[in-house]
Structure formats: structure tokens, C-alpha cells
Amino acid sequence: MQNTFYHRFTEETLREALQDTPVVLLHGSRQCGKTTLAQYVGEQLGYHYISFDNDNQLQAAKEDPVGFVQRLPEKTILDEIQRTPELFTAIKASVDNNRKPGRFILTGSANVLLLPKLADSLAGRMEIIHLRPLAQCELTGQKPEFLQQLFNADFDLKPNKTANPISLPCLGESLADIICKGGYPAAIARTTAKRQSAWYRDYITTIIQRDVQDIARIRNLDILPKLLALAASQTARLFNSADLASPFSLSRPTIREYLALLEQIFLIELLQPWHSNRLSRLIRTPKMHLSDTGLTCALLGINSLTLWQNKTLLGQLLETFIYQELRKLADWHDEELKFYHFRNKDKVEVDIIIEQGLQLAGIEIKAAATITQSDFKGLKKLKGACGKQFAAGVVFYDGENILSFGEKLFAVPISLLVPTASL
Image 1: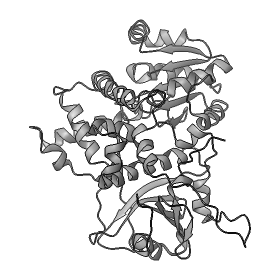
Image 2 (image 1 turned 180 degrees about the vertical axis):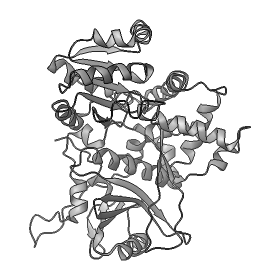
Image 3 (image 1 turned 180 degrees about the horizontal axis):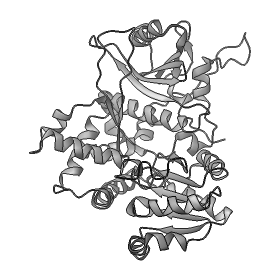
Image 4 (image 1 turned 90 degrees about the horizontal axis):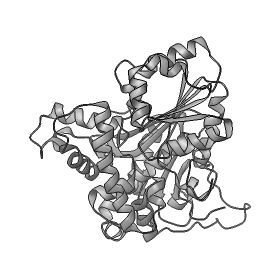
């Protein structure tokens, strides 16, 4: 693919799905790379491409969905399928008549499984691949291995038992630049921070005026950009609908409906709390994370310099950044992973908890270059509660060495997750 950023690791997942599933849905936020990936794979495998951003195709599909599907070639990509929910029943009928694998590649910029009447229409006939903005390992071409290391508690980077630990680079101010750049391919391709920020502003306008209108009719459309900007300021914080509703003359239920729309188009997501009968006084409130830190910085009107100078905000956005990086790695992991956070009423917390079957791992995130025993307080609490189920606990920090802070407890440089050199 000529000078184009694309999802090189998800490509393999897509190809595998097309070998045994009639319909494969690539869904994720607009401009995250769905069309590029679908067309790249589709061109090699002989797929016909149709976009419902084309008004003629859109109207033809809406007018006669059954006839539209019947006239399609055997292998077809249908781009932005959320704009034509009428097609799902027709696709279901077509697939029931011909279950040949790989018939349809669908892409969607809204979570079609949350749209009315669509959740069950293709059950058992469709594999869903959630595409997020690009991961750092995709940009550098390095194979993602962190999750395997985490669940194996294997962070020994010594070339042999007598050698000193291998040093990894501190990211320093470049960390703020990486956070501000984000993972959207079109934004990354822009040559200056100013142009990247302009792209994000245009992106927000397009999302609000187009994609939201495709799935809902709301009266106060002008409130959504302001609500999204307010949500950006609360990323990596406990979700509080009252705080988000207070600046607007709208009820909390209405604000929650608007936030649900932003979640449906993959701009925000809620990280649910982890529960355990072995721990008391747990807070049962989810955390809110924006989908991309480049988008977050554009909404907050900050650049890498102002972010680097504001250490509190840097730590907040770093948590969202690492959370999203881990979610991207999880999409390629062999085992299903579930993500949570943990906090009790004594403010003991673990930023991210990842479950793999009966195993559980904890992640804490620090923007500092030094680490102390106190940074492991939440992880030790979690380890004590989980016993043999506890796989490992990691505190990410901006240092150079992987350090052991007890059995299955490690301080790990952020640069292990954010590689800086291409292979």
C-alpha cells in the first residue's frame, strides 16, 4: 500500500474471517481506516465496492432493499452500512439462501448492533471486527507482544542471567507529541501539528452534522460539540452525568441520551467497574474514556507543548492513551479479553484491569520518570484479593528499565508499549 497508514495486523484477522463467515462487519469511528482496509483486501480478492456516502447508491438501496441486494455481485463491500439499515433484512435473506463464506464486507461508522431491530438480524451469520484508530505498533511495524508478556508475567529483557537489564528509551517531551497526534491515519499523515489540529476540528463538525443525523434526530444539535468537549475534559475520570449536564439547560436523562449517541458512533466509551466479593466498599461507577487522544487534545484546544507543561492533564490523557493502546492490542490477542477499572471508597484504585479467562492482570499508569513502592498500592490490594488468579501487575512509567517490585509486580517503561523505531 503506497505511503498509506493502515491496519496491518487487523488485515490478517479480516482475511481469516472471510474464509469461514458469510458477512464480516468492520465497524469503528469514521476515518479510523475501515474503508482503506476493506478496499485493500477487497481489491486483492475481487470484491465490488459500493459506498453509501454516494447519494445515488443510498437512495437505490432505500427504495428497493431486496432488489438492491439481489443484484449485487457475489463478493461485495458495502461501505457506511449504518446509513441503510433497511438492507440488513435483505442481506439476512440472501445469506440464508447462500451461506458461502466471504460474501459481504460491511463497514459502519456507528455501532449497528445498537440500532433498532438490527441486533439479531445477522446473528450467527456475521463476524464483527471493531476497528480503532491506529496503534503505535502499527505505525512502527513492530509485532505487539505486551499482552502475552503480561499474562505470562515475563518481562525479563536480560540477554542472559549475568547481564544488566536492557535499557529502553525515555519518551520525555515526545510522549506529549505522541498523545496529541493520536491514531487517525489522515491526521497522522499531515505534516504539522497545526494541520493535524485543523483536521480534527473538521472531523468533529462532519461527525456531528452527518453521522449523528444518520442514526438519530435530535433538536439541539449544536450542544453535541460542546458536550463532546466537556467529555474530553473528563476523560479517564469517573463518569458523572450530573457534571456533564450542569452547563446545559437539559435534563440528565437527555444528556445521557446524547452521550449514548456519542458512544454509538465510537467517540466515547465507558470502562465498567470490576466487582469482587473479596473486596468491600467498591465504587460501582464506570470511567469514561474518549476514543482517541488526538481528538481529545483538539477538543481541549491544547498542543504538545501546553500538554507537556500541564502534568496533571498529561497524566490524565496518558491514562486514556494507554487504555486505548491496550484495547487495540486486545483485538489481535488470541484469547478474549475483558477490561475494567477498580476503585474503592478509600481511593485505592487500579486504572485498568484485564481479564483473560480465569486470569486477571492490573495496570497502573504514571507520567513520571521515577517509581516508588506506593505506586503499587492498588495492585497489591488487587493481588491479595485475587490470589492465584492474579497473573501480573504493571505500573507504566517514563523510565528506562523494567524493574521488579515483588512477585508478579513490575515497573515497565511506557516505551515498551509505544515503540519509537521502525523495524
